[in-house]
Length: 314
Image 1 (spheres, rainbow, N blue to C red):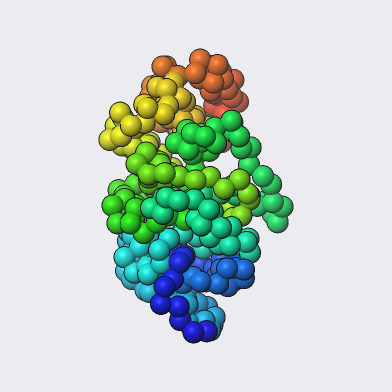
Image 2 (cartoon, rainbow, N blue to C red; image 1 turned 30 degrees about the horizontal axis):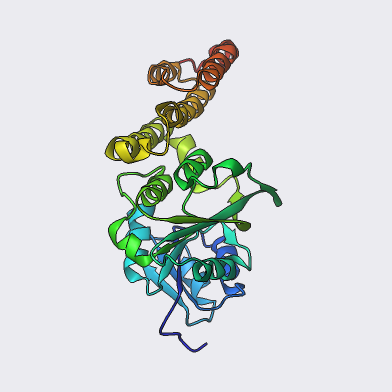
């Protein structure tokens, strides 16, 4: 296909040893009804046959780069630096776009008169081949910061003007939660248009990178995730408080702690469980916080007995 010198969309896929599944993501870009795009695949040090899989797709709009492994944030920033498009989107190697993704974003860009902006859409979650819609708080659509905060957004369902990404990049120190960190920073500083259509798919599977890594290194990963969200709140405190109450901010932190605390019980790590509980923010929504604490207290005896009999109590 003849190259377009004025590319509108650059889609960036970071990947690492996912040759067996990256094809679906690539094919979803090739199947777009809007065709003025380039696809940048940043191979973050793969040792499998990822290169051969990518090069089997004969399309000049696909650009492949191999680099030493430095994790996803740096790989995405590398892709940003290589991008030629006016708008940049990010697709994980295990997810995919629906065919109208770029067409719908193109339409929204034309309809709105603020060119240096970010655009986002709704997305499906797919588990075992079944797609389900996320519970969208429609009442928050006029407050993008709060909407993205409560949705705990990723960066997948976005198209972001390249000028924004010259200023705002992924934080390499945020190994978990870097998507959310960037999306909220962008929403605090730039206009975000929300497209009320389901156009991308987040695919859940047992080999999903963050899930499998969490099981192996859950203490480290919990600390990194909490560090990332606390960093976001501290560095952008005044701007965030213009859109969110302190209880709403703390609700998300407590939600993260609750998830990590539940994992700690499952892995019989009660010392770390109690350390996490100490970090719960009391200046939060009382009902939600009470539910988290009650749920932990209710399940703790079961896991404690289970771990004692398994000889794994910690």
